[in-house]
Amino acid sequence: MAKNSASSQPGSPSPSLKEVKAMQRDRRRQMKADKKSDRAAKRAERSRKPGIITQLKQVFSMTRQHYPKLVLWMVLAFVATLLVGLLIGLLLHNWITWLLISIPFGVLAAIIVMNRFAERAMFAQIDGRPGASGAALSTLKRGWIVSQEPVAVNPRTQDVVYRAIGRPGVVLVTEGPSNRIAKLVNKEERAMKRFLPNVPVRVVETGHGEGQVPLHKVVKTLKAMEKKLTKHEVNAVDKRLSAIGSAKLPIPKGVDPMKARPDRRSMRGR
Image (cartoon, one colour):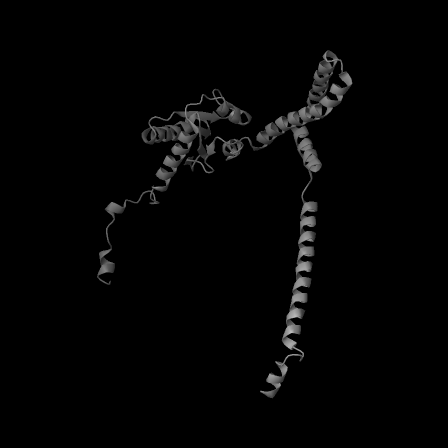
């Protein structure tokens, strides 16, 4: 007790205060070390990620494999932009300034041409594979609500139907031959018209046959459709279809719970 009272007297050294200061110094050192490690991890992550130039090179090499004349089209886009800028400069009697201004726009035009061909090359790689239609729909931008999973599937033939909801209405995008996919489409169309009687339902068949749309033209085809709904109506249609889908009970096919019979032997303990 004497020792404790002596250590608590004013003017006597306080070991607890020293320990607190030491802990604070250790905490500051640890915080500095953590910050350094975080910065090092971020630098390493940036170095692992390819830069814009590297990404452009990868896209260019991949696209050139499918379209050997890609360089020619990019050069034509660049030269055409320069000519337009030069023509404007001659009309305004300041062709040097407009020629310099048109150079970055020419580079941008060449990159846009490369991106268009790259998109076609990507679709050419996945064409004919399961889920290709869904991948094409995933490139739709805002204004459209696309189902991530198919709304109808034929497990035997792997024919699928995807659904996109936009201002043109409900669009069913099919994947499979027309003669096989017709049954799935008709069933889905009847369901849409039953639950959404005033909403237009359209069908787009993907493929290379007669009346079918290639993958790289699917997005363009959907955007060109006549708009029938407002943005609020699009959200209301999506909520309606989501509520209908969540209300379905996960009952296995082939089993009727209303006709099930109890096992009487097990009830008697046998």
